[in-house]
Length: 398
Image 1 (cartoon, one colour):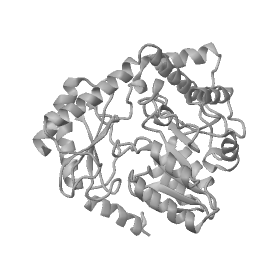
Image 2: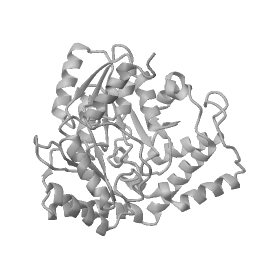
Image 3: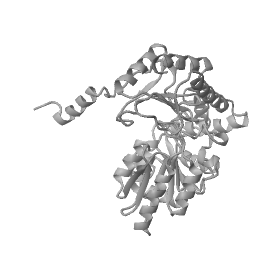
Image 4: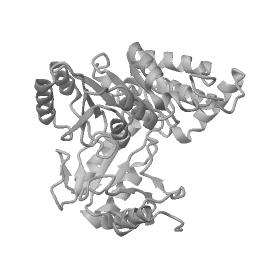
């Protein structure tokens, strides 16, 4: 008998041939241009100490949650956190999940019903796609950030299914491009067709809006969006996620979201870390938001260096076949499209040899021919580091 199924080995071999086999790597110690730790909170000694002091002060000496939130794991810190989220994010209700993946899978697998329609941006995150696959609804993708295409889908579905529920899923900052849809027009369009809007704000919270509240809130759309998903593993530097919406949505998820019901809850230490991270966001705002300002200064400097070094810049987010260049972005995520797994991995390795941790994004994570180098910017990156990494890149792709 074989030690490993042949069909599984075949799939691994195909990945190896395509130079797309994923591997777990150890921390590199290189200059960070790859993590989602946009404000440096994940490695913040202040955040660590504030969390520790909070737990000591409140006499919380508990390692694990002991069970799911519906059994024994609903620690009092949950109600404190969820009330704080409602106030901070101007939401009627909030429900904390163990991760962004759990939240998206739990939302999309349980809320859309048989006969409902889900329209989703073609570049939507894998966690949303997985949730959609587990739902009983019909799902159709629309072209990336293309409101004309979304409008055609809405018109077509509404004409055929007059009384059915339609959900539209997008992100406020896309993780693989760093770009942003026109949320104001998207919401207006969905209102016209009676569709419910769901926005993943994973890469926007902590970066955009007052005190890092996110783009939906910055635009004043929080009452027009059916659900917002916010994760704590990016700019907030910790772990977990929250779904913001109506009290009815919260009650529904508590009753029907399997990734919420059938999992051990987050431990008190994680909850305290989330609370302290949010406190730091508020305090950053009171102190003038120095870290957030520095992040946006670095974003502006990175874009200026792209222009100075004469990289191609593709404003529509669409790179012509075979050309190299950056996708226009105003976020902390900037991507240089370098077609081909072999080529993009080679250039990433060269950047790493020069001391810069820049990761290649390979197909099938992105479409074949749209492989890319993904630069994540942080408040703690220096202008010298930004300039140097782009100078090295220019020797290969400019």
